[in-house]
Length: 166
Image (cartoon, rainbow, N blue to C red; front, side, top):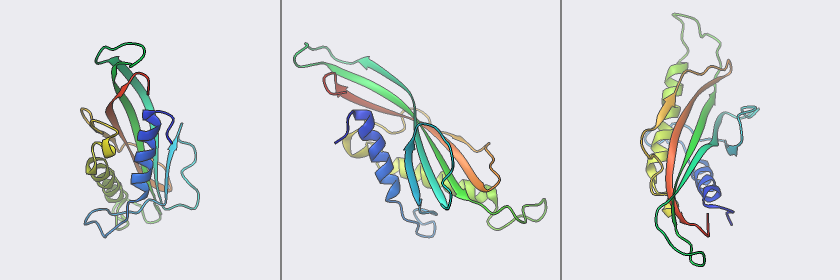
């Protein structure tokens, strides 16, 4: 059982992403063979081909409705998440005018498409959240690792809870 609502949201994101299966791009291009919730990005999963790493960022909690100490009161919260999506990429032949097929850019675009499709497939995470993408979803493709095609997505999950059960 999850220790907090945030813990349950992290578990739902992780288990949902781990269930993704590639189908030639109709729904998803890649099947992640490592999906994890981490405190920071360390190693990208030696021996893995496709890696999804969720990392929690800032949270904000505000009183939504009043109540008493016995029954609690309603709270509204937002939690920032980062999702690093990465695919092992062989850079041989990655010279100007001699790009591999698919190119690093195309692999990154496919990873981002898969991640956005996943996040929008159940925006309430089975009832745990009010919205997985509260506001905007940001994509950072300005990342480089010699052996990986990768990008990071930033999104904010909005959820509510009773003060006695954060």
